Length: 382
Image 1: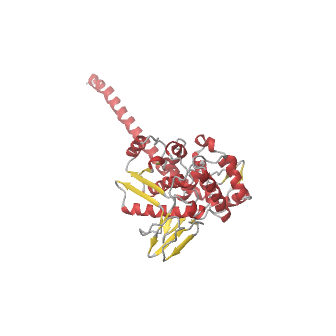
Image 2: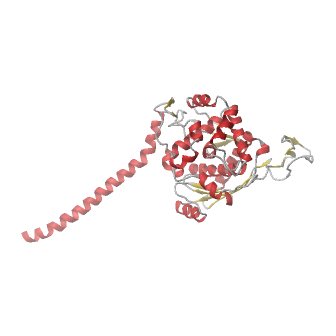
Image 3: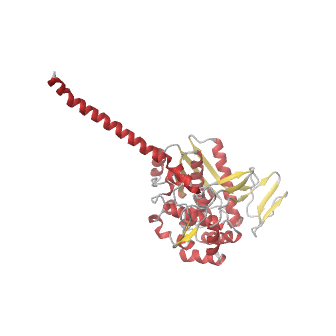
């Protein structure tokens, strides 16, 4: 019996050791997963730890450097994701690539633009000096040829996205003027899984790694990975803004292209009025979180964009555009820059020319920007 017991002792001990090791692995594996899940909420709580910003070293900084929930959960801001490279490869490069905006009749009122670029409203048909006239449909301005598709996308999602994009287009019009606007033709396809998104983007010749959405200018098509309702909506808007930029101003510096996309992607609509809320990059108390580059640093980061911190670049691009949109002087500077870009749609302005345009239209921009960063970031009406 003693020998029989010894015979069974070894196998039983080994079996118990294997079971114990497996249980230990599952236990710690589960703990690691749990920690990763609660990490975003911890960083959100830290958002309220400080409210005031200060300038440190060669960059503007604030007291909130931790990653936000959106940055942690979405792969849009990884270094290998560069919308500008995609536009260079798949964008359309031709002068005046977009059509002029068409003007329509609504409820018996004709709206058109004359040869001087002045908007006219009348119950009579426009005279022969009107640029475009198209008496149909229910909207005054024909902003988009927009097609939104997706196997699991609701009609309500499509209608909301369409309304937001039209508000954004009106926002662009308020910046550069109706005469400079171009019509945008765009198809947005929402793909229900990461696997299908990657496969589709690769089939078009793109690189899906590190992205949740990609816009192909030559096809007038944007592909978006479907995740949560809010994230999918913001990504679709982000890619649509790249399409608007491509049609209206052509190729542009990365900070301008991404800054405009970041700025507009949180647009909300109330009673047909658009409002952008800066909730992606601010704390609960309303101050910008994390480090922000000086304008000269941001403008000069074009050649090092892919090797620099993407979160810092996106945040800085958004902050600078939000700043420019906050005052009439800033809007005039942005208008001057965008109209200058529109003159050469197949190339983007270099560092020297961007600084020349901005400094020429906004001489005290540096000091004004420093003051802006030390105040709460407010929502802005389009």
